[in-house]
Image (cartoon, rainbow, N blue to C red; front, top):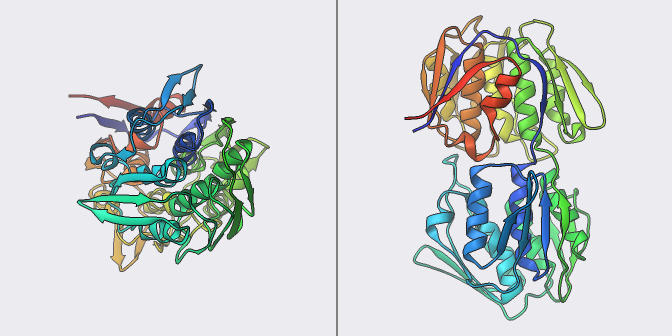
Length: 419
């Protein structure tokens, strides 16, 4: 099993290019199921979740070819299967995103209940509630969601919570429905907006994306797309936190500063000097130790839950005491125990962790528990004295493209070991 070995103590310096956003790529790939026309997506990162998605689409009969660097070509002329099997779905929650497009395109979909990171309950009941409101008959049988509808009907869908994948599934299904669908309390994340923009290039009629009310008027059929995915704001934020923790100076390119307001604000509060351009962000820590910050996660445009673990690591070596509060997922502090192995002074209290920053951490063997936790352990290893080895890095490969290579080009002493 692969592990990442880090010798800490080197400030990060230089420039790193940000990959396409995993959480936008996956639904846009699934959107190819909505049409029999050719689709091309550029900026696709080489990630485990992306290859799983392509394997899933391939099993359903989608023709897939890899074009030039970071480009995928697809065409779903005829769908060979209406089933997303457990073997693939169990590794990736985003597999649920085939449900809406399959149901809308061919009137039936059979999708295994999903798996993914063990970070708390993320029920799919809101997806099903929305599709039922649009006229779908839905049963859950032997671990599979079985959905049927001759043609979905436009409806008013009020989401109990602003679920990203729920919003995306209902929005995709609504593009081929009869009539107009209004999603209220819709997720506002940039990845939802990116999917909507891609659907619009396919001929979908969508408005209000980026707000909490999205309106979709269904079409008889959609065209294909030729689209470039937006850059990954979580990857960009992770590298900026790494620079802040190590006292370095890093510029991330092919980035979208406008999607990172909450994160950049907290980094400035921690003492970093931030400069932004149209498609780049530079963080200069000037060799200083960061100051502790208080963070509370919230749906976009609030502070992203996917950056919580990284700021927990930053507070571990910051001046002062910081409180990190998690309001999105109830089981997302599994990295705390591992950070304590490095000498971090942390105390869990309900949905919050109180962190008293230490001047130094000491390297140790660590075990990754989920995608963002694995990134936070790598960041902690960058500042810990001695050697840190992070095991189970298959988690990190689900969401970060070549993270050790990118960190190495910024000056980190890091390498991947296998066997």
